[in-house]
Image (cartoon, rainbow, N blue to C red; front, side, top):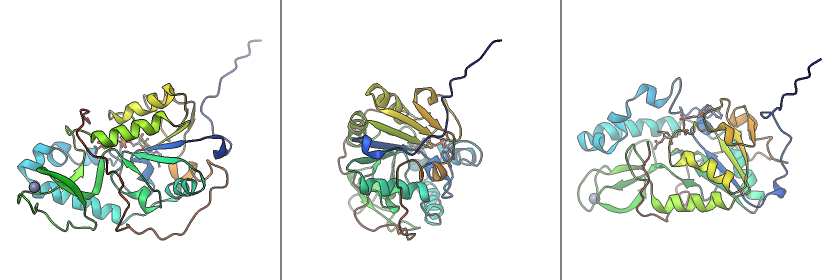
Length: 275
Ligand code: OAD
Ligand code: ZN
């Protein structure tokens, strides 16, 4: 008789004792916000299957027709404002409150982690809730369904969303901060990313090379799944609340805070392209 033993790599797991880890990094993508109602980028119903990024999400499109590009981003703001963080966001924020070192590195621009109460979120691809002028200067918070201002006070030019569009450089300071966090973590939890957009897609490998235990939360596997030590094939809102010991849910009121939610102050030039 031949006995075949399958090594079950992908399985649901017992709750993790967060006290066994010194530094926990959550690396999140659009799937993190999907259950809140924010569309992902790829796949069915994804933003890039409905809108051509060449018309709405690159510097050339903005130079051609700034109003069209700004209207698109206002539409995205309204969508996000109609959504709320889900229990997965809240459980990360809750873990950060009771553990000495929890960092969120996100590709998302929706501010949902901050609304759930997470602090010091590293926003790799910028934010829907900030504007900046191509002439330079610090980005400014701008919160609401519509932009408060469309023009730069200094040069009179059109202000643009502080978002990393196709062909843009990533902010070097933000990138360096993210890399430092990932190098120093001993538990790396990736949630809801397809792993196709570099340089962010290089982070799971970086975490692995630095000997972190790597967990993927995503209903679907992708090309980077083999890098992870464990995979949870479930949705973020289902997997995260039970992932750690004694996750507790907090209040259900999720304002888009006016102050202090965006902490990426370490801004500079960068040499990495987003695809
Ligand atoms: P994608 O839209 O490429 O991928 C979303 C991922 O989330 C997929 O792997 C889905 O299987 C997974 N997913 C869907 N629902 C989920 C759920 N409920 N729970 C967990 N996972 C779920 O989004 P990103 O990987 O974030 O860049 O895309 C990366 C970048 O590409 C974005 O930041 C954006 C885009 O172009 C910029 O705008 C600069
Ligand atoms: Zn200007």
